Image 1 (cartoon, rainbow, N blue to C red):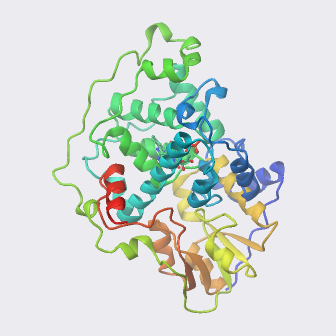
Image 2: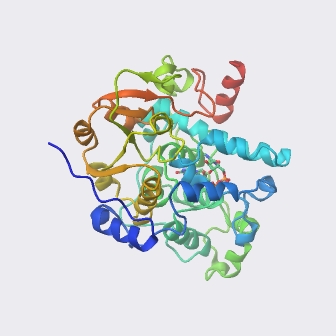
Image 3: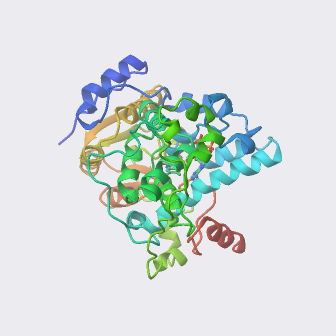
Length: 411
Ligand SMILES: Cc1cc2nc3c(=O)[nH]c(=O)nc-3n(C[C@H](O)[C@H](O)[C@H](O)COP(=O)(O)OP(=O)(O)OC[C@H]3O[C@@H](n4cnc5c(N)ncnc54)[C@H](O)[C@@H]3O)c2cc1C
């Protein structure tokens, strides 16, 4: 049985919004409004070209006014493979040394999160060191309250699909450390809205906040807001009765009796990291891309410049995730942009069944559980290596520091 692809998403904003409403609207949550951050290779290239790392170390934690923000906002493009970590790492090389070092350190945090997820997979959901606490009561949202620091951050997340790292730490700490609610529902809510939402970095961010990766939960109180976004306190309607005036009580979770042994050692690094060289076992008829690999530099796409490209919106997965309309629009924009250069066939349905109809495909190995699961049911004629910033090692990944040390000792 052959399937009919969806019509190509149009490149203009109104057109792509209509396209998403028509073809994916029943899978989306929230208002049918796109993010001001556009998807696509052209937008990603422009964002990278426009990013100057000068001043990053001093300004990366700034939240408001907007002119005080030093963060790059490159994360949605990095998340979806429109900018690879090696390319971004290289881009900043001629900036001031301290800014380059700080920025590259953050890229390494992203790499660490990816490698943690590549090795541990869905175990990252069940907390790596600490027992999972109760989830939050359904229907409540501890951020949608009068305090400006919480409510405006929450609104920014919903309206733009982006938050600074500071604001992510505030919201996640309020949810877990102050309210005592389990992190997994909070992580899901972030994931629904963040254009850069990834299970790898989102989970490691939440686990960092609760102290699972450091042993020390991150406390959030008025002090940080006064320092990073003083205007929020000035216009806050509850400034005189600030609900976060003082540090939260230390709600250190119960330590687990044992750390998962795979956190200390990986006996099968090749499976975690994927192939080092291309593995060609047949003749592909198309290139399969996913939400991890929407960029021009995707190794499988580069190797097969003459083949059509296939993307499948995974119906069952998206029905479960209920991603924001803005997230789905960002993906559609990336496909629209890609189809200006390549023949792109976009489908909606079951991924492995759709690919079975397409025939043998070329694909880039992708270090996430969903790709591993689906790829096992697909005829992959040629597999290309994932563009790691640092190739994974088999040593400890119990923390960023442990991961970095193991890396250094293996050089
Ligand atoms: C609770 C919580 C949830 C998070 N969820 C995500 C997520 O779903 N996806 C995501 O990419 N990042 C996540 N982060 C990490 C970080 O907040 C974002 O990567 C960063 O804010 C993105 O904005 P930027 O590109 O302007 O960052 P910049 O400061 O300009 O950093 C440049 C790049 O470095 C990487 N980076 C920076 N900080 C971190 C970090 N702490 N951990 C991992 N990578 C980092 C990102 O790729 C980022 O684009 C989360 C952090 C927390 C505390």
